[in-house]
Image (cartoon, rainbow, N blue to C red; front, side, top):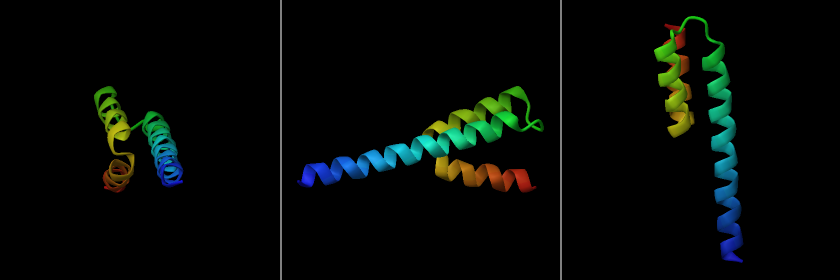
Length: 63
């Protein structure tokens, strides 16, 4: 039973990670203010830690 709970938690975390990475990927791709290298850098960052880098991206975008 404990394994099932652990697998469920890991699954929810993985799905959340994928959804947030996809959201950031789309937002960066649609941003016309970034050049090709900046877009690629943000897209790669979104695959690693999407929550943290989404916050960083929004913070940079407001400046």
